Length: 249
Image (cartoon, rainbow, N blue to C red; front, side):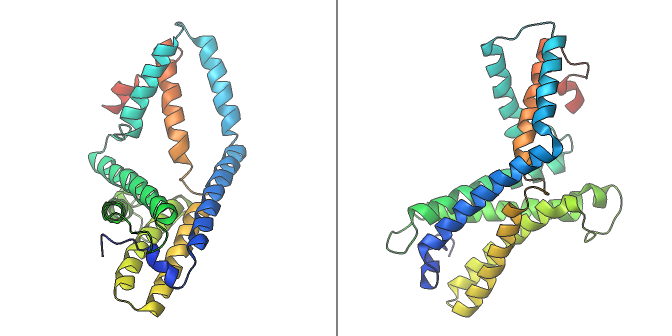
């Protein structure tokens, strides 16, 4: 089960082109949602004004090499290792979800576009990585949802009291949970049950990528930009805030 392409089996009742079109639509939804979020929050204007103020307050001019070095540090610390989290549990949970999400998305796209049917055998490693990504998301996501959310861990609110900020984690968990169940049910050969569970998988996946305007998914794009700008301000002498490494210790 874990080494077979679940999307190739869909051709029993769904044309391969349907899932390919669906992926394209979800990409468009993410782009439109991210742009809409930026326009609503005036993010572009804010970053532009912040950059101008930082340049005016700078006491040292940074070279292209300096900025490249800061970009590498941002990727290595804030992106690759979630260095902004001082809480170890939140950091591990975030990393499980981050890398699981990358595996889940990348292998989904590969299987749907490169190996869409059973006529084109899928290398076993690809669905295996897809399952690893799903399991990483399930572990990191449910750990975060039940134990690490601020309103639950800090404010003592009930686990199932949901707010708009929970939209991303709820739809993400819904997507990967039903993906895993769908794969299991599909392996039993029960076509009716497979269609039923697959419908919930598509529902939650559509909500996940279609709700970017209101969820935290767009933060995945904004946070590295903010982190890089802060490093530039610190290095150029424009920042009045404590240094990043001191704050995160």
